[in-house]
Image (cartoon, rainbow, N blue to C red):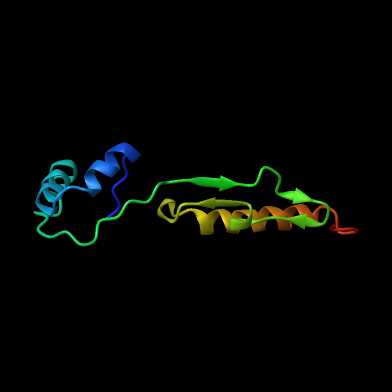
Length: 100
């Protein structure tokens, strides 16, 4: 389960006793999957974006996680890496004489 919330609220929720956590989760999520009955390990990971302000320099191009790093929960790191590579290839194909 991934439950996104503000950092302040996450700190409060992660420290709740299991019964209180389950009650709050049930209230927030609803009954679409029935009753929540058990809590496993509860952890909190802040969502961050890290990026390089300059990803292209003389004969060097950063792509994928070398250019920007997203928190894994965002689920977009691989997709952005593929996009970066496709964009780089398209750019290189425009000038084949000196790809650097």
